Image (cartoon, rainbow, N blue to C red; front, top):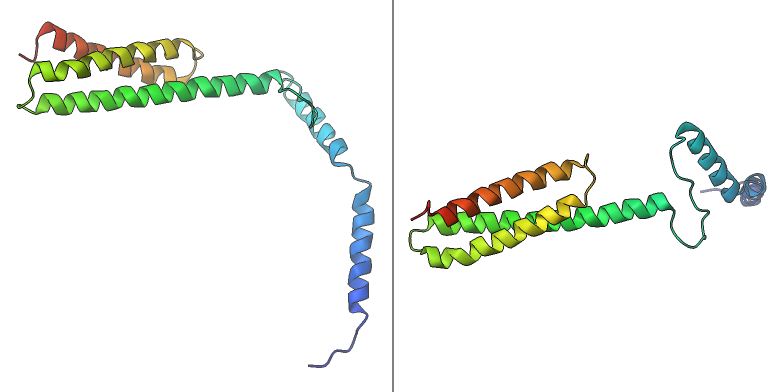
Length: 153
């Protein structure tokens, strides 16, 4: 292999230096601010964003985080109630289980459904998770009522 031009590396370095000089006058902070201004113009109801490095979160971000925490708590409680319902179903299906052995599951289900209802009230009215929680609460309530009424004697 024959190397003909040794100065091609110098040209490459010079071209890189020119690129960095051309982009050197572009300020990321300035571009970010311009993008934020355009976003505000498109979405006038959006809360202003805090500049990077500023302490504290924006109200919108903290609201989203707070809502996310509430939703996560509700999902965990919902999964626990569904798990209790599945366990309860399995215990009912086993003819070897007496109602006295099943009763602790019913009590745990009642506590879980109560906790789920409290968490549901903390969610916004239009949150689709509320409907799922409502359905799980109804199913739990029906099963608790059936057990207490003596349907499974």
